[in-house]
Image 1 (cartoon, rainbow over the protein chains, first blue to last red):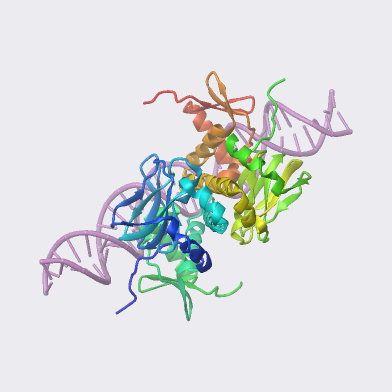
Image 2: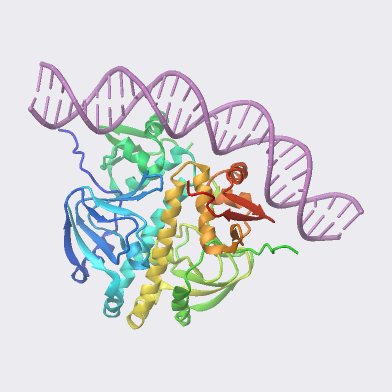
Length: 222
Length: 222
DNA sequence: GCCGGGCTGTATCGCCCTATACGGGATGGC
DNA sequence: GCCATCCCGTATAGGGCGATACAGCCCGGC
């Protein structure tokens, strides 16, 4: 029996910060979402945001021509929806549970009063929003390139940092992503993803083991 | 004498939020930067962030091959550097004053204690980081497209929202940006910017008046 | 065992972007 | 007034990506 193709997210927050948020769970309320239901939708105005406990939530932006850009897959111990909840503007993305999902739902409406008693919670939330800003900015840096290889490698290294295990030949991604998902997240076509991964294999930079991608240790520092 | 080519930023924060931050200026200290000096550099770790009072700051990310992606030009009444200041990780971007610049420098180190007395300041900062996350995410949505026209129009409409004045034929951008700057911000080549703007002119969607771009009112809602 | 669906690997073709180069116009320094 | 510099417009060649189509593979259902 080979490795399970367990669905995982594309995001992780460091333990310490997770704990800091968990400690304030009492300021939110538990809320569950069945598979294929919506947490929030692009365009709506809401002061709610979510701390995912279990399951998987897909965050995407729909472009005006109807095409979908997948921003992230948020797994357990991540926060989503806080951006629009704090700035008060319409949601710029949609969130849908693609597995049965449990969350803590927070509401920013009375948050200022909470901060007075628990200023460390404000700091934690600022760390979360800052982290998100960072990851989006770094993605942007790579999406600014028109080279599919740049775009795809960026996604792979990000996934590696979050979800890879050591392997004799390098680092193995435990997340299973299809070429189509990579295409949606990098703004290229499915065919190009296949071709690019092929090319990377020929360059001996990656390998595929049982459907999982292995990022090889840099072979020679040229 | 025609319109001045005053250099402006690519960013603006709504008045109310600006005031909320200004009211807490006493928690920071005044600091000025001469033209062509650096506020902070990619890679460094720092807990400082800046509220720009006067001048212009260019935020850019340098890619590993040395090429530069210009994220934003931050003019007066904007905040920069807060991302890395709060999450504690190395700066993912560099900031350089491209005009003589005055700022208020804040330090996140003792922020938690400030939040206890002034929880509304935490809320304001959360609004700022959330807004930034939003703008970067929306840029990402468009950069995900490989069509130069998408990328360039996104920049233009964003600039329009922030820095355009009414004009009999539409909205006139008071910011003057060169094709080369547009290229750097959209990840295309200078030639393509010229060609794309040309094409938009032919499609009667924009016009150029005295070096400034005019976004025409949508001609026909088809 | 057989079938069907989802995923990956290829092939072809047309198009558009990048790189490069060059000319002309505006602007500013002296 | 003259020249240098910057910016915009344009041409050419080359390459790689997108669209489309199809074949093979794996896996699960029945």
